[in-house]
Image (cartoon, rainbow, N blue to C red; front, side):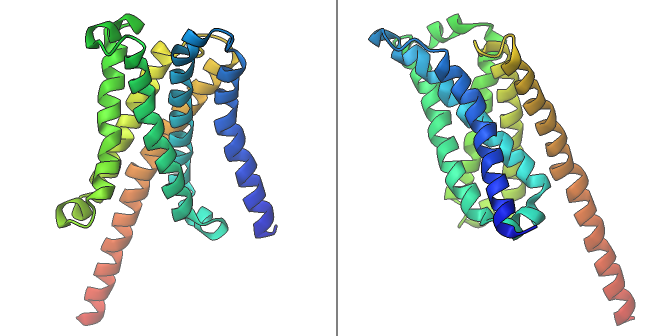
Length: 215
């Protein structure tokens, strides 16, 4: 199959993966009442951010193949910017909806779920902070660890959204969300566990082979 076909298929897949939850939320809104804009809008950014993060998780599994089909780095950079904006706007609008009262944030649901979201946000932001400071040796040397930390943040937001998301408590979208979460967990295990271990084993084999040649 041609590269253009693969690019088209990937674009459609990404649009459906991101557009389905966002459109489900937007389609259920009542926009007639102006004061309802903020409480109706902030969940959209949460759905958008998580859906894009899910694509990132899957892309880690298929990265070698994806790099042959698309400009992978451009995809990551552009979607990372959208994710950053979304993960900032989601809690900011939720906070604005309760007049910036930290105490009233917990009126949205269980305290545990709120804290999962807060910690998840902080861990996710390590990616953007680390990326901005990657020119410094500490951050470049620990880039893989930063990716792991931000991925843990992503998984925390899954449980946060599953507990609090008004659109995710029942119905079709909840099933989709569970599918996203479960596949993201397996993708994370593969990318940061099995794949890294496999790469490490390959490097050890190369060193062993080089030592044999030298001897």
